[in-house]
Amino acid sequence: MKHKNSIITSLAALAAFTLAGPASAAVVATAATGANGAFTVSTTDLADASQGGTVSLSSGSAVFGSAEAKVIDGGIYNSQNTNLTSETLTPSVGSTLTLNLATSSFGWNLSSIVVLTGVGPTDQWERSDHSYTIALSTDGTNFGTPFINVNDITTASQAFGGEVQMTIADNASAPLGTGIKAVRFVFANAVGPEQNMYREIDVLGVASVPEPSTALLGGLGMLALLRRRR
Image 1 (tube, one colour):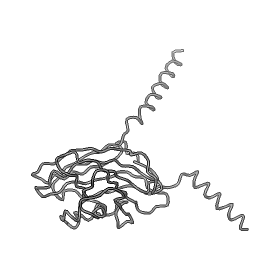
Image 2 (tube, helix red, strand yellow):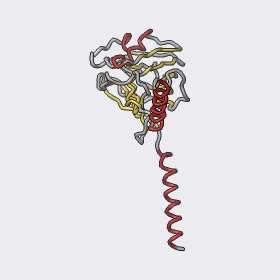
Image 3 (tube, rainbow, N blue to C red):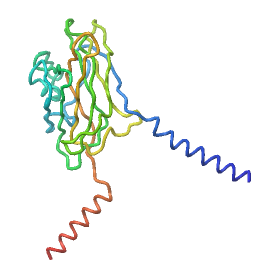
Image 4 (cartoon, rainbow, N blue to C red):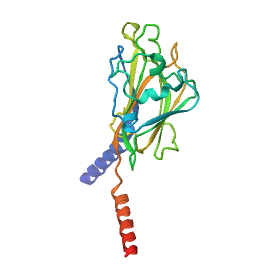
């Protein structure tokens, strides 16, 4: 009986651990601060124009007109371009920015999204806030409920530029989403004394692959088609 009770206790502990494990995982936004040009942006992320990514400000407006295209091009620091009016996005409240990712038959498993704000000039250093929600789409058209609401006022000091890089990822290294083909930002108020100023958005991940059962069904479908042709 003592041995039986020990087994029951062990099973109960295992069940508790199993239930508690996933609950401890969460998507988090982690801020880092640096001087002007301190952060390296990607030129090969899934949203980058060189990889086939596209971007549109599908609702709302931006202070700098068509500058939304610049926030995915990966060139802001590689070219050391500091032209604020052509290289930054300052969206109005409620603006919706849609990032269509590079083409992939089964979409992408996203590992992280990195957003960079703030600029170097001393009269702009406070524009480093982050304020937005992010939602994902598996078909490029329909978006689910936002999976994170970022509202952060981590501001670097005026002495070294005030740039803030926000990394959004699962703290247990799980994908942010699987089979993803588009990412949508909806912007809110700047939470600090100035407007938010976005400089780069990188979407990182790897191509999704079909589940074995899906691949098997596809193979069976092709086999049936070949038999019909015979």
